[in-house]
Image (cartoon, rainbow, N blue to C red):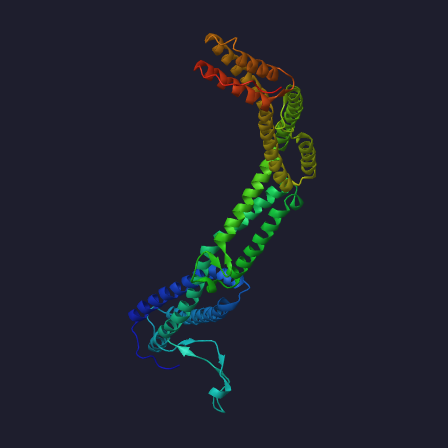
Length: 424
């Protein structure tokens, strides 16, 4: 045994022993905390790669050094406690040995290989390092700093990114459950394909976060390698909304089909009524501008049957598209039919308007004492014959009534044109 730097007294030995035991307990507590740290446990159990694999390999060597130094520290303290416990007042040789243990290079570390290039011919291939307890603690400090930096950095990345990944994963699970309620992937092929893409990107991001978190300590917190988590969440939200809409389509399918059936029944009735109305108008009015009736009900009813069949097959994506398109087309057909009916009724309304106009001007002429005026009487009779004839030649009637108006007005001004009337 090498001599101690100096021989300590009994009180000094007890005081220094207590200080070293407290220091040893602190080292043990720190190493146990490191052992149980979530970041260390994830690193220890993960399939690491890249920068993280390199730094964790160094970190594992540092951990081995820390535990080895602690074991050596504890072995010295065990010898101190055993020697000091022999008697209340240690003998001189015991004081010398205790002083060496507490102050000298008493900590013996595990033997390690000495590279052949670093030893002489007669040197041993294994070298045993010896340190004082102070040197032992000082030698542990860089290893502790190194390993805790790796663990904290990795844990910070996981703490920051894993919740976002888990949130996306939970969203995928929710959408998958709703797709299952709709009938499975075959019922929602577009949304299923989009969800598969999101899942692949998520797994790529999760693999990188798990295997090489230290590659993600800088840069955009929302980007993991080539995966933009914000874009991924936006895409998942769009898929979620689409599946939710399909769920609503399925829930309200029967109700919407019922409304469409009622609307098409009404459209079919209105088409028939408009055809009858047109026929009636054509018996009363001769006008090439009376439009044909657009008949859409039968075609739309065929499309409704096709949508009902799609609903039975559970193809809710196509049902949603076809149902919305059909509803729009039914509204359009109803509006076009209403406009056509207005055009059909227009000539008849115009005829009635002309009748009223003709009679009002006849009354005006009578009040002016012009009722027996030959030219006016001829124009009136001609207009009346045109307007009360079936079918009425509306364009000719318009011209004759206009001439009658002008003639009445002129006669009231005593400006009687030499008008023999419209040739008949």
